[in-house]
Image (cartoon, rainbow, N blue to C red; front, top):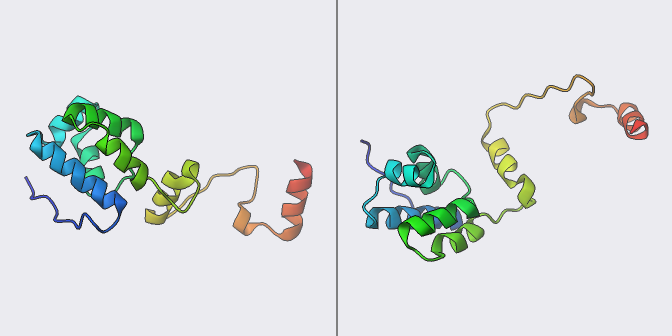
Length: 128
C-alpha cells in the first residue's frame, strides 16, 4: 500500500478539510476503504477528499461526522471548502472543466457558441 501524500493542510480550505478528514479517520482506526464502506462510497472517493481533489459535499460530511463522532466539525468545514468564485450550481462543473484535457460537445441542432457568427446567434435568439 502506498504511503499517504504529505500535504499542506493550510494551503486552502479544501486541503484543511482533507487533512481533518484524514486525522479523524485515522484516530478512529479506519482505513479509507473501511470508512467508504460505512459511508456507502468507495475508499478511492474518500482519498479524493483527503488529497484534496474533490469538493466535499455537505450530506456526505454529515455522514462522516456521524461515523467519526465529530459533532458537526466536517459539515462546517465542508461549507468553507465548497466556497467558489462561480455560482454553487456550476462550481463542480467548473472544477472538472479546469482539470479536463479536452472538451467535446455534441449539438446536432445548434452550432456551438464560440463558433457562431453574429447573424447566426441573432437568428437563434430571435427564434427562441
